[in-house]
Image (cartoon, rainbow, N blue to C red):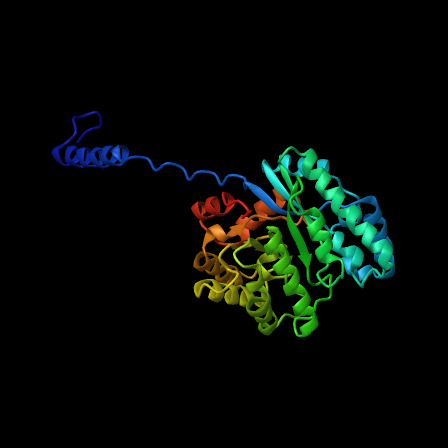
Length: 342
């Protein structure tokens, strides 16, 4: 066929077929883009602190520099409720929980005289509660107590029911809690019973050491947790220490088993995701195992938490978390829409 001549039959057939495919492809409905993952409704794990505690921790850091070597320098700085709100605003997070570090004043690590420690505990808790009140509902304060301190339950009774108070924060590592010492278990159990009686939810860092055998987690689940009854309880770092390691995953399996058998104390049990990942190189196998446990336990039992200012801002940590734990966007939307049990 000469150039410019009419199309032959075979060419025409091929042209029509190609056009038909193109039209069919064009006629197919376009897939809508995956909706963006919204900001969490709450950051359930934030810390502010008084200038007095900042000075005490700075002095402690000079004597024991390894204590804070893996943390951001801001952990030694005084921080206010306004500072916390600025972080929430930057991350478009509407509300947050201030977990008071007042428990540090009665920690054996600092060695503060008993009478001074009691007064400083009250002042530290007051600083957090006042910040919550000034926030007009955006912040809730969890007072901090060392459960091994003789004044722990009195401090809880003083704050129970007051405006701005959301619950009580306990840190077993800071308190040097020994899960295999009956006296320690008895004291912690008594604090749990008091929290239940006062309608004070608990947020608790359970893991007491980097080495964390499953037997230690089992003591807490079997002997301590039942004392909270049906009151809300939030397990910090999803049962770990920060960072995703085998011990954290194994502990979370025990919680999953307990929830599955409806063990006492698990009805309103939640987990915060604070510092579950600490860098962009989380072990993929552990991350998949952790995600599967989240699904088994129920995504609505997990809440976002950043542990600001330990390592990250809430905005930075949210972005890191979704890249390291392999949930689908729809699953992340469920987690980030989950409020803290009150």
